Image 1 (tube, rainbow, N blue to C red):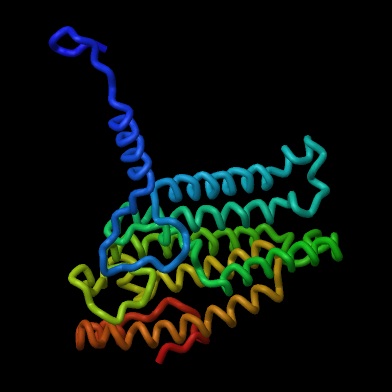
Image 2: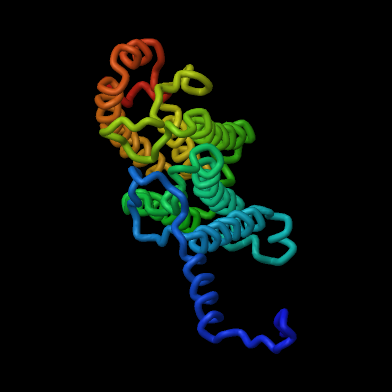
Length: 281
């Protein structure tokens, strides 16, 4: 390459190395997030991590939908395998969509808290154990009792539509709660009130004061009903009920301190949206 004075211009190896180093550093830049919200997990908080996780979750959703397409699997001669059941396929799709939407809603309506943690893949070990137990129950029961889904309530179209409605409704309620709360939403209970935290009483919060918890509860129960799990459904209801009961009591203690009588009156007027057996008093 020639310079302006006609002499050949030779790029400096040090400049090239510096440029490459800058590009490498840029690939590992942290995602934007408010300084008061610290990362909770061990996943790298970088655009590279986000792109890889998004691709993997998208692949899970796609593979699960294909697995749920029984006519295609029958044509390929694979429909006899337990792991190719449409129920397991829709379950995998529901899991993938849930974790993608957790990140997308944060990115779209709460970007200052955006980090790799927003995928909720750093959720508690109990969360992953519970879902692993549910998949194990499905595989074992389907293998030991191959006629499980050929009789009983599992074969009823009304039952199937009800479970699907509960699954989609729970997911929609969860995502709408995050959208309507916007910058006031947080995945962790806050003991300190920040400037972006205001009392939300509109949208889905007009009829449920904890719609994100209610949505997650119904979504989680629906995933186990979808798999036809009796034991896991009962376990999910019991464990999640106890968890949300304790969490709501702790969270509302801070909310009363933050918003005073405004929250007290709101709590009297609006329920949690959770089943009656989950006490929050």
